[in-house]
Amino acid sequence: MNDAALAELDAETLRAAYRARSLSPVEVVSATIARIDAMDGLINAFVTRTDEHALADARRAEAAYRDGTQRLLEGVPYSIKDLAPTVGIPTGYGSLVFRDPAPVADAPFVERLRASGGALLGKTTTPEHGYKGDSDNPLNGPCRNPHDTARTAGGSSGGAAAAAAACFGPLHHGSDGAGSIRIPAAFCGVVGLKPTFGLVAHPPGEEYTLSHNGPIARTVRDAALLLDAMAGFDERDRFSVVKPLPSFRAALDEPLPPLRIAFSPDLGYAPVEEGVARAAAAAARTFAALGHAVEEVELGLEDPWWIERELWAAMFAARGAGGLGRRDELSPGLVSIIEHGLRQSGSELAAAIAARAGFVRTITERLAPYDLLLTPAMPCVAFPLGSDQPDSVGGVPFHDLNWTGFAYPFNMTGAPACSVPCGSVDGLPVGLQIVGKRLADALVLRAAGAFEAASR
Image 1 (cartoon, rainbow, N blue to C red):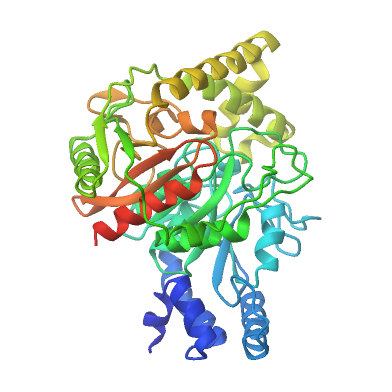
Image 2: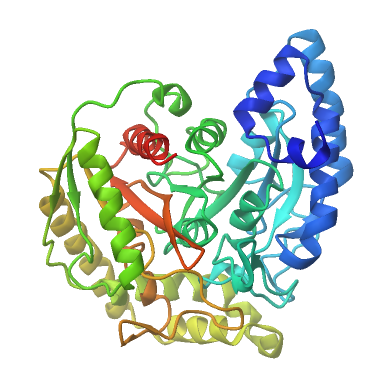
């Protein structure tokens, strides 16, 4: 098998081949590194490469398979988004100002990934502090979409999704505070899951209750495998889910029961491009053809962007105010958000917190009769490089991140939400969003897997 074919294999295929001794982790990691060498100069998915680290991991994996001591991801190539601290590997945060050349501790999920035996390829491109839905940044520039390199890969996990789409390894970590896993997954035509809040533990001291860490991969099964490795209780995170978790990968082998599924083309407020709307509606019909009761619903929600923005700005102010002394080296959009947060009064922040609780109560009540919700993942396909966002959709102009109107509501609820490819418009991928109830991540993945199988 040539290097190109090796690099295109999914994680489950690699694990089976390693166990059968028909493939070597060293040859797979070497082939993946060669592919990154050949292609990433244009795509820019990686900000930091750890080739020698990955090869050392692969050599250890070969010994583990010989000895029968292999772990969950033994020898499988993976990456970590450059917002997660990693001991021994610089963490850049997409920033000239906040770059940390020597983190003192791994994030909890990084610890779990390292302990899983995977081969760490490096850190992937993100906008500065993950503040926007495109991955251009002052540290290493823009990340390009493998489907059309004149377009964005999305953000803020753009490097992770581009790496997945370009076959720079099968498994990639992302994080999502307002759509940052689902935006690039949809734009790059891969699978991205924002898990239930607390399922994957945050670094100690990180109190940002909108942000979720989760998997990005080319297949649903690989996403479930990576979630198995990342998820789990950690006492350092007071929001960490305590209950025992299932194997998300094993859950994919269980047949789906008949489900009651809501389909909302707009959530009541979100504009959407015609081609994207058609693809999402066709995907909803696929679920009906699979035997589920699918109902198009009028949720009648009001756009909660103002709530997300107030909470978001407060977080960025807390994280980034110290960098304003070097504002000329910061992304102007990040400066604007930090300054907005610094202008907030306590009563304004309290009002946003109360409004979030009200919004969560409303959407939870309206979706209570349904097992799942389907929506477009994004209102449009990937936009051209050089912009932070689409200018408008259907004549509706955007500001900040309110163009991700299908995504941020579920950061506020903490519910699991997955983007799975559901077609294309003019050769650019479209994503379907599948949303479940809190802690129903296994059901969301099973539904995504059933749709993936039906769409082949």
